[in-house]
Length: 390
Image (cartoon, rainbow, N blue to C red; front, side, top):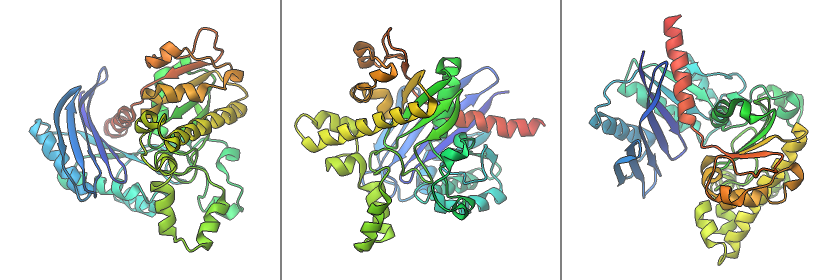
């Protein structure tokens, strides 16, 4: 039976959506779109059918509910008047939610209790759940948790060096980008190898170490702020930096803004959080060059750390916007990893080939475009229609 699934992926100031048509034999992406810079001036919205642009407009939305109303209106114009289910990427499932869940009133209440774990993302994502209910009162909705993929990590990787009561309160390493990692693992199958690292590099960026396709360690922790530097996030810091800034009179609100919105590539370069912009500027702007160098250095350092966790490395995968499109970044990360058996084919890398390692490389280096939305669609199909048929 063919089902039409709406997949929603909300950020703190963005909305991305995809409409999939799924059956037992086919998985067809019908429409995709986004609303950007929600709550700010200079917003933008677009809708595509495959590669065909249906509209691309400068338009501002005051909140996610307003952006959702515009999305539903745009879909109605394309004669999408019936949906069978909606699936949501929810960034955090806390200590209890380790698999996709059908959203009901009980789960909604529990998710509101988890906002403290992800205050930048969960409020807008929960607002999107309510917006779907307002437009389609009886439409089944499914929560797909980004943290679920990492829930089986060994305790030694999950536990922070804090007293036990902190662990019991749910303060631990959760990890994120799980839907992306799940897609890559499913896409590559046996080609992934027994010991693999996936680097999801975008405005938000993380890395996972995999043994036989299962997460054994990942760099983000309690929140999506940890790990290596990102577009606007600082990544890992000496905790003493926070204590120092608090002692200097910075408030928690001010520190949140500094660490999540003013740091990373943007903070170091003083110019932009966009890797494409910094790569274009680095020959003339020393700060842009330093930001790119620091990013590549930190990613390379974690590759070495996770190769130690895995006791070797069979496969290194690049994905995400930077990982898929920035060949210069991939090459700079891999430069110096020859001791792990990594040898890059510069021509293949420049053309964004599926395999960018050369024939003598002992470690296969791959570039794999990710598709979190397809994973959401699959989970939604399984949860809603497997339940209906049971």
